[in-house]
Length: 391
Image (tube, rainbow, N blue to C red; front, side, top):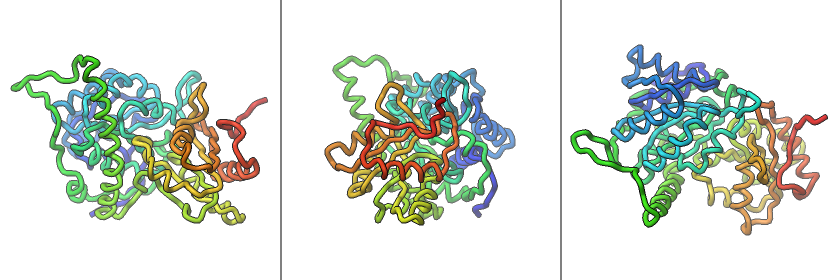
């Protein structure tokens, strides 16, 4: 029987990994991720999870150990945040290039200097070219459910790539919410034991893979990764529907849509801003402004056709995000959406950067942003700051 429990987003991640029956957990602490691996350590110690818990010396080593475990045929899981993710960057790219379906929770946190332990999406966005599938959660229930889903997608022989589930630091990681814990038998029905489909390390039959590749073959390998991560789009939709049939929950596939069909203006965001955007849309509708909300649940692979079909025929698209590509022309989400829609629609696209370093951004702020966009008519700049304190 499924049961309910009040838990933090970090515990939801740990419980999701336990339900997925992960077998190897390399762990290294970093705020605000630390309690994820602490919970998993407790599960292993108390006999609730049959897994190897490996205390490594750094985040780089954590991903290296995941790579070794996955290459040996185990379902591997780790968690990190911020500078920890950057330290493991070399191994993040190696995991994807080696075609290993590793799972990882990333608790989004700003990067120093100056030191800041609160939410921003710069850490995970810095890995968007790695080949990792990227999910972004809006609440703790989605964190738990998506960890189970991500293994289903990542381990599919049409994909065979690592995946991360991103959750906003402190807003989700340390905030308690009611979460339904599904029955283990139902999870096992949805996600059977891992059966490796790629190359395996076996001391009885030694082999080498992932070594030097000359120019005549390297580009085709990158093409193959791109083709596989694109295959994940349809599989995410398929397995999300299967998850709904078994557990009764559907978090939106690639995009979560809210009052979109009759909307004139769409607020587009990621993570917990997606929930604020729903409330903002309701607030604006009470004032006679037909607004809707689009939450990007999957950033890699980018929801291409789904996005195009969703946003056409609107008066304006308003992208609000916790990221800025320094020296670029906006945040990653806004920039990619503009590139996707170029030549396909004349709908104006506003890009607002806000909430960096955890600065509070509420539905009131999002409603103000929509009104500012309507008043402006068409964007005058590539992107705009919102709630910037300058003397």
